Length: 111
Length: 113
Image (cartoon, rainbow over all chains, first blue to last red; front, side, top):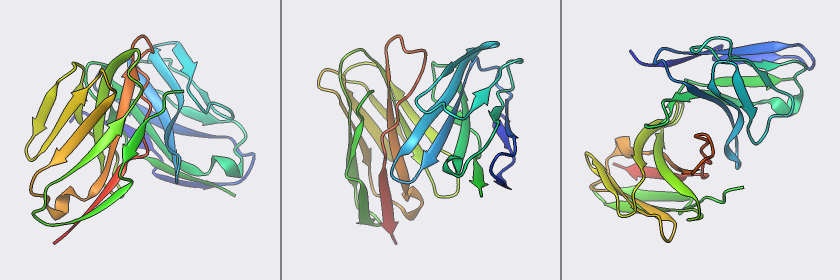
């Protein structure tokens, strides 16, 4: 089944403790992206990647890092999480000719 | 930043009603317009990707039209059913912007049985 797999689904962590949210797709898509969803603000792009070793900032990149060492994986790294990064995160991929396929989401709470 | 507006923000209809909502976006440098359905506790699911002015796409009881010259798209649902209850997002993509989508805030549809 074609899918984007994100882990974990839920995470509660403390301020400053580094964490990684993993994202993997099995569709051989070149383009992958991370979004966060906050009430009243809609989906906002954090980072995206056009291919292996090619990444760039989206609209809200502060406090996040990404890497794309392999085509299928695009992890999101929070080096020092803060409470304002409490959000619902989605990873998505596309071949750019069709719509995005989204992962099931990661609900992150930073206390 | 691309300004994407969706209206109405929310909509309550009875089962069997037909409904439609609007997505407005700047028409300059247009490349494609995406529609997604987002059910509660799930992730957004692609409905349509539209590129040509005058495009019309259909999937079951849901259809969409596109006007790239004036910068709007309509989504229609014929004979709404409770399972159509969801938030419908539109997202334009500009030419040459590497595939980035800018999402509107969505129209939340509630269909009462």
